[in-house]
Length: 173
Image (cartoon, rainbow, N blue to C red):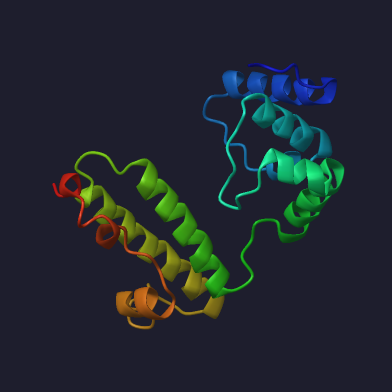
């Protein structure tokens, strides 16, 4: 089911579509401020409800949201998105965010031979987390000695995708 977006949302969609088609190599780095606009969030909610979307990871259903108050819920969501800017404040939050993304990706792509792909994702996640930690703690170099894999996984709690699916017969390549 398709809903006609409000005029302002439609104008934004048209402008973004024109830019994307006109400049395929263009990267949209500054779209974050568009995500938490009240009209965009309201239209997204209406689309999800029209499609009879299921409860998310927070297990909130449309009934829960409407009992709580849709305007209040959207206002709090907007406030949270604007205040945090999706930037993790500490290392535990960064690792938790990274784990959610990796587990979500791993669950989505869990069919077929995935062992080598999971190993590559695990390596890249360790690499990027080390980069972030080195920048945060002002450490020169790659950070392998200061932040070994054992530290990343056991102390910080970084998930290992390979271990999550080792019992699945199709996960072995």
